[in-house]
Image (cartoon, rainbow, N blue to C red; front, side):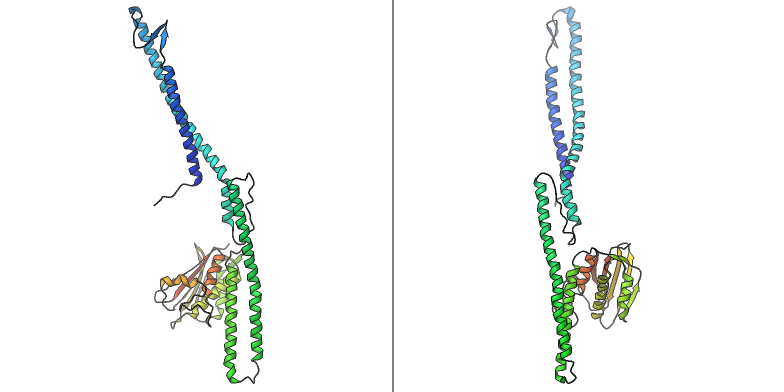
Length: 372
């Protein structure tokens, strides 16, 4: 199991500093041997060498002995001073090398930092941004250019997706609206045989299901990207408006200021309430709470429905996923309710989580960043 590695800037600094220390250490060793060799040369006084071997003349023995002692002491002092000052110089040069290495690493990594900051600020609404790095065409410049090319391809892909969603919204919803109008007009004749009335009702119900499915898919496609335009909203006000048409829901609505799109957030609360009522059991308890805490604004919806396994909860946020495992559109819905909830929450920089309740049912909590 490998430990956490140091940042690249620190590693480059250590490499540069180590090289300085190594070079200074080699110079110290070379300097030591050179100085030792120089000061170890024999010294002559009056043509006679001064050293441990004393001269034969008795009168000069004391003088030569004193000179030899002084010379040896001076040699030792020179070698000791050379070693001490060389080590001190090595430390100073090494510390200077670390400082230089830190500055050089910062300068070398500055372009990479620019790439990182650009990538961190990107979303599908800011893919038009480019690094546009200047300077010589080196490895970092090639990396930046490659990143710009990737952004350009992503920008074209997202733009094509947005155009497709806009076109699909018109091309799919308009024919269904026309079909519904034709059905209503064709079967509005009072003389319509009684045997055809169930067919009429089934066709109209099928038309409504298809419209809900398409509307859900388009909403899901629109919300699976970060919002750029936000306004102050209060989840308690949105919940109060949404829950006005429900009689069986217990509400505890406290101020929950947030920033976002009021229409989408109202759709989130409506989807949560619809799901809670739809999948409730005979106990018939549904509660909605809004409020604000240290983690931001939240809306929480709970019901007393059937028992749900913990491993099944995360799958409920997948498109077309239902508790009964049926992945086809039905009269009860298209199976996109919680998928839209999660997509809208993520688009607002928030989260959507669900946990099974003891005794059955589900508790879904949507959290958003706190508003101003």
